[in-house]
Amino acid sequence: MKRVYLAGPPFAEEYRRRAAGLLREAGLEAVDPMRRDFRGRTQGNEAEIVEGDLEEIAGCDVMLADFTHPDEGTAMEAWHARGLGKRVVAYTGGTPPHPWVVYVAEEICAELEAAVRALAGRSDSAGTGSRDRTSP
Image (cartoon, rainbow, N blue to C red):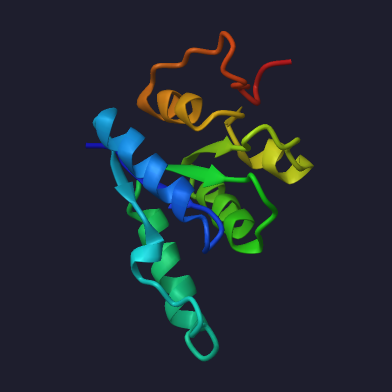
């Protein structure tokens, strides 16, 4: 089963819940780093947080990144995944993507459902807001 790292802001519970359900329906395994919840106690635990995230990214096949709002952690995770040769699919919720998101993401989808279809290999670009970064 393909493992999908859920990158996104720490307080994006709705994204994580919806993404996990959609991934499960598509036969994919969601790996949510927020199960190691450090919210409210990050100070002094930075190395444990980052090293845990890096280990989980390395252990996943692909990444789904929530770029509906700017978040430094999500950007760093996506950059790291791309550097490892992992496929990154960005979900924007319709927010115009930052140039760095365009650079690191193989596909950019306005809708979460389209992003999951892209990860599952069922690309349905008609009307989904998907964009393959290799296309003109």
